[in-house]
Image (cartoon, rainbow, N blue to C red; front, side):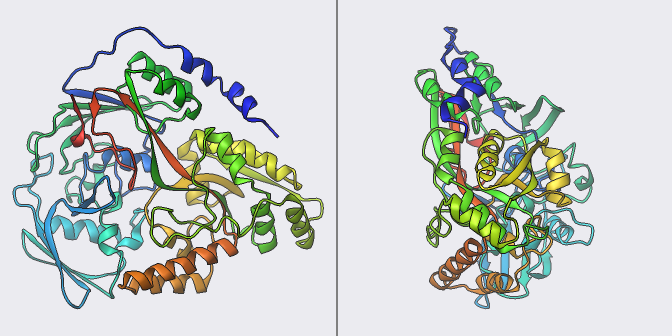
Length: 496
């Protein structure tokens, strides 16, 4: 198996990280340039599942009724307040008065009704459509009031409204939001040079406090070496999630830069097509689970310890339980299970990998670990639009590696059409119970049951929680250390 030393030599990044240019950093005090690994496929967070869409648009261009802050708490946004009736199904939102869309359209209750009804329409492309299916009716008694009645108590309803999929859009501009987004946020769309950068400008008609920065640019850099070089040269002011973890020590040693390693909600998994033979066989999935040495995989990707997981749940949640011991690393047990499943000599499959370095690097190690038990996984690298189309939408894959960064998203395993194709009526019933359980203690116990069920079924190869490596110029304040949601709120940034 490839050693850690060989991994670093192959990446060629340690040498780059040690080349410390002596030039002084200079930055405009009213602008910021931020590097990102992935470019969003569109600029409409209600149109697809890509994290990069939300990272550049949520809380910048678009806003929801409520928002999530850097600590994971729900805060007012386009709704300045709300009340939940004693029946636990009626939500009354008091809306901001004076808020406007970037084209001058006044924000009213009608746009809330339009946005949520659009999300569940038959032709909806909203990746989190289930957030809105509990809604029974939406009333707009006046322009500043929305009353939403649910079909049944839904514990996570308000929480889901913080996601990018629940932003408010206007009927006149909704169709064009993929390329020319129009929202109510503190920044408006200026220009998008595909393959290079996205430029935003401060919206002077914003309802909230005036942001410190007049302009913001997101530059898209998939190459880890390019990310490190741009930071060291001062070409970018920050990187939201560095793809070169082996450069962390060198970047930390640069007094011009500040480096933080934070937490995300990103459960990183060896995604498995549960409906496709031989992965529809539990013994095969159990064999894969026993073949995965999580610690070796994580160290090979990052070079430092990260949180390992045994199910699809964040360790930051009080209901989390450590299930990494359900299927401990045991190659001989994996071989025995494959023999029991009818594959004494293993089998061939494909491992389709999206561009992020954690996926590509983990994929090489996973392929070697699987080969040791007889599973020959042929690696096929994909660009992210290809991955979304072939793996996520069309389910044309055997195995893949991806981090799921939405918070508290264990319910995705209850969707029959989700790309894992895990179909378990008992799990669906359990998720329905969780959704309708308002007592936190009872709900957490049900979450623990759900974690155990996924772990025991070896639905996916559960690997680790994606860390967030943020690098910024020392004078830039306001970057999020942790990611309870994958967002970069520009209005919180300023130069000191």
